[in-house]
Image 1 (cartoon, rainbow, N blue to C red):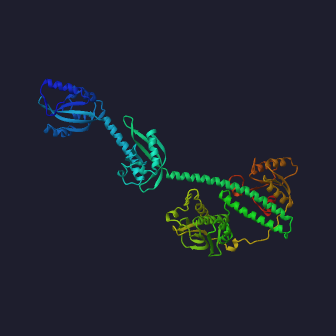
Image 2 (cartoon, rainbow, N blue to C red):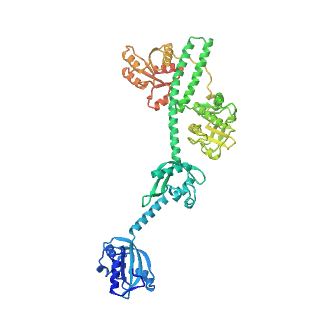
Image 3 (cartoon, helix red, strand yellow):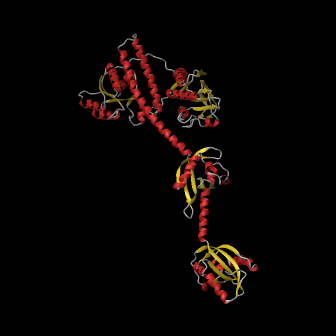
Length: 635
């Protein structure tokens, strides 16, 4: 190559220069310093520019550089005119004869040809380099601005690059605090990361769940995807990893699993309650029949009455199970909270350990609210159990009922109240207490302060649901190490307390009647009890153990039936289908259903059409007699 201070003075020198430059793998051209017209262009230049040497000799560099005017190009090379030993390098765009363009890097030096000043340009086509550079820049921007945390690390685990999302998610200020450190510093378990890196080295990639550790030491769950990055030779010296924070996803998954478990438990509870109601129905009917043969002075008569009363109390327990399984609708009525607390005190004693002292206080007498009694008892039981769990080494449990007048709207942690009169049920303990952050989450579903496997996190959330459903609100007052007080506020009822309290009255005699009744019940004890009671009341009773036998009786009997009394849930055919087939055979037939589930729940499930009477098991002789009589006398 000719040096810029040299000149070519002979024909042989010029011929030699031409031969050398012609075979250069890059573009080379020479242009006159005064006119700027091309004097020489090697094969590479002619091929890339798509011009012959004759066509180029009538053109100048600005003619093939669209970014430069002649004046701008003159200004660019002006310093070289006064400094023959200088040179410049710049980037430009060459335009071919066809109009297409490509990126170039030009190294320009002054030379002398035949004592005439000129410039020689060595041109490198950097189009591919520019494209790769642009792609790398774009990739870097994509990585840097991605909301997904991304890191690049060597296969020995040292961080080479971390994007902004990774830096922020892990709690650092900038990437400089991360780059150069070992990846185990950002993980919850070093052994887990070592296993992942080993899989990367042997398998080339790894995906799965892992635990990450923030700068402050807190951990969170991530879904990690990592793979090797091969170099030009195909060998891998580093790997790229992306992270997705799945802490919330795992929490929702756990809640969904808990919800499914609670649904299964609810179904089980509903089934148990249904079966238990059938047993109670048999016990109650048996007691009723047995008492009929005894005088009231007979000791056995009183014993049977106590058994029947216990069975009716058992029915309240099954009602709570049906509430839990959502197979029973709330039945609000006037309830005196003071009386509920007094009546259920014995139950709490069985719920809490003997080292817990229980006290009750009543600051009012007219503490009447409109609510489902079963819900009130369930709320109270949940609050007592929570207080007990907060005192593992014993303590004091106080329950107080009072009234409150609210002059203006007020917001509590568990709901809002409008101005008015309220009854307050407060349950206090001197147990471990809670801090402010824990209190703020106390009513959230599945939130629990108990260790894994010892709490569902549904106690206070179910209380919240029931209380707000009754138009009330919950307040919580607690301090770590200083105990907790939970207050339930319910709207005070207008009627006085004495209206809400049912006065004991003599049990009226069961209504007698006449008519032919077909009883269909698959439980033998219940079926036999109903048959004996109805027969004793003057009815002619035909009992069937299953729907198919009942249909045969309806089809074959020459006598008319006045009433079909049928259970709903039975194997093979349910009571509603039986009733439909019975009515097609005997259109004038009256129908009464009975079930261990509530009538409201059965209507919601579409099992019973509106307009049909449904008796909920267990029922008394009086309830059975009155329901049958009403159905037979209905127009």
